[in-house]
Image (tube, rainbow, N blue to C red; front, side):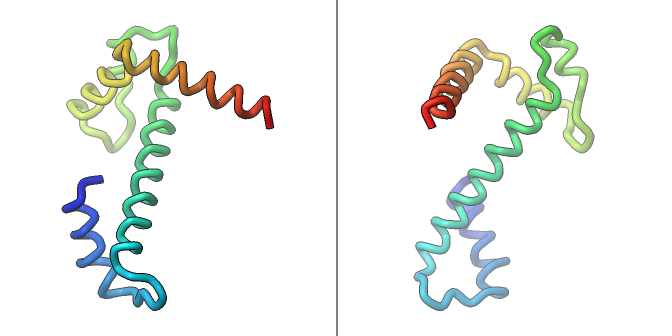
Length: 104
Protein backbone atom coordinates (compact mmCIF):
# COMPACT_ATOMS: atom_id res chain seq x y z
CA UNK A 1 0.00 0.00 0.00
CA UNK A 2 1.18 3.53 -0.66
CA UNK A 3 2.49 5.60 2.23
CA UNK A 4 -0.09 8.33 1.61
CA UNK A 5 -2.93 5.79 1.76
CA UNK A 6 -1.65 4.28 5.02
CA UNK A 7 -1.10 7.74 6.53
CA UNK A 8 -4.61 8.83 5.56
CA UNK A 9 -6.21 5.68 7.00
CA UNK A 10 -4.18 6.03 10.16
CA UNK A 11 -4.88 9.73 10.79
CA UNK A 12 -8.51 9.90 9.59
CA UNK A 13 -9.87 6.55 10.77
CA UNK A 14 -7.69 4.91 13.40
CA UNK A 15 -6.32 7.79 15.50
CA UNK A 16 -9.78 9.26 16.27
CA UNK A 17 -11.10 5.84 17.33
CA UNK A 18 -8.18 4.16 19.11
CA UNK A 19 -5.68 5.05 21.79
CA UNK A 20 -2.19 3.58 21.30
CA UNK A 21 -0.99 3.29 24.89
CA UNK A 22 2.35 1.47 24.91
CA UNK A 23 3.34 1.81 21.28
CA UNK A 24 4.54 4.75 19.25
CA UNK A 25 2.58 5.84 16.19
CA UNK A 26 5.27 4.86 13.68
CA UNK A 27 5.26 1.26 14.96
CA UNK A 28 1.47 1.21 14.78
CA UNK A 29 1.57 2.52 11.19
CA UNK A 30 4.10 -0.14 10.21
CA UNK A 31 1.93 -2.86 11.73
CA UNK A 32 -1.16 -1.55 9.89
CA UNK A 33 0.77 -1.30 6.61
CA UNK A 34 2.03 -4.89 6.98
CA UNK A 35 -1.44 -6.11 7.85
CA UNK A 36 -3.07 -4.35 4.87
CA UNK A 37 -0.40 -5.67 2.51
CA UNK A 38 -0.93 -9.25 3.71
CA UNK A 39 -4.70 -8.98 3.39
CA UNK A 40 -4.40 -7.50 -0.11
CA UNK A 41 -2.00 -10.25 -1.19
CA UNK A 42 -4.32 -12.97 0.15
CA UNK A 43 -7.35 -11.37 -1.54
CA UNK A 44 -5.62 -11.23 -4.93
CA UNK A 45 -4.54 -14.86 -4.67
CA UNK A 46 -8.01 -16.00 -3.57
CA UNK A 47 -9.63 -14.01 -6.37
CA UNK A 48 -7.32 -15.53 -8.97
CA UNK A 49 -7.72 -19.08 -7.66
CA UNK A 50 -11.50 -18.83 -8.00
CA UNK A 51 -11.32 -17.88 -11.69
CA UNK A 52 -8.10 -19.38 -13.05
CA UNK A 53 -8.32 -22.60 -14.99
CA UNK A 54 -5.31 -23.81 -17.00
CA UNK A 55 -7.65 -25.35 -19.60
CA UNK A 56 -9.30 -22.02 -20.42
CA UNK A 57 -7.98 -19.48 -22.87
CA UNK A 58 -6.94 -15.98 -21.90
CA UNK A 59 -10.11 -14.56 -23.46
CA UNK A 60 -12.35 -16.96 -21.51
CA UNK A 61 -10.68 -16.00 -18.24
CA UNK A 62 -11.02 -12.29 -19.01
CA UNK A 63 -14.73 -12.75 -19.86
CA UNK A 64 -15.38 -14.36 -16.48
CA UNK A 65 -15.38 -11.12 -14.49
CA UNK A 66 -15.97 -11.59 -10.75
CA UNK A 67 -18.91 -9.68 -9.29
CA UNK A 68 -18.11 -6.16 -8.14
CA UNK A 69 -14.98 -5.74 -10.27
CA UNK A 70 -15.00 -3.44 -13.30
CA UNK A 71 -14.24 -5.21 -16.60
CA UNK A 72 -11.26 -2.98 -17.44
CA UNK A 73 -9.61 -3.60 -14.05
CA UNK A 74 -10.23 -7.33 -14.32
CA UNK A 75 -8.70 -7.44 -17.81
CA UNK A 76 -5.56 -5.67 -16.55
CA UNK A 77 -5.30 -8.01 -13.56
CA UNK A 78 -5.84 -11.14 -15.69
CA UNK A 79 -3.27 -10.02 -18.26
CA UNK A 80 -0.77 -9.39 -15.48
CA UNK A 81 -1.38 -12.81 -13.89
CA UNK A 82 -1.15 -14.60 -17.24
CA UNK A 83 2.26 -13.15 -18.21
CA UNK A 84 4.94 -15.79 -18.54
CA UNK A 85 7.22 -13.99 -16.07
CA UNK A 86 4.53 -14.02 -13.41
CA UNK A 87 3.53 -17.66 -13.92
CA UNK A 88 7.18 -18.77 -13.72
CA UNK A 89 7.64 -16.89 -10.45
CA UNK A 90 4.39 -18.33 -9.11
CA UNK A 91 5.46 -21.86 -10.03
CA UNK A 92 8.83 -21.40 -8.25
CA UNK A 93 7.03 -20.07 -5.19
CA UNK A 94 4.62 -23.02 -5.18
CA UNK A 95 7.46 -25.55 -5.35
CA UNK A 96 9.27 -23.78 -2.52
CA UNK A 97 6.14 -23.82 -0.32
CA UNK A 98 5.45 -27.46 -1.18
CA UNK A 99 9.04 -28.38 -0.19
CA UNK A 100 8.73 -26.49 3.09
CA UNK A 101 5.53 -28.37 3.97
CA UNK A 102 7.18 -31.73 3.31
CA UNK A 103 10.19 -30.86 5.45
CA UNK A 104 8.06 -29.88 8.47
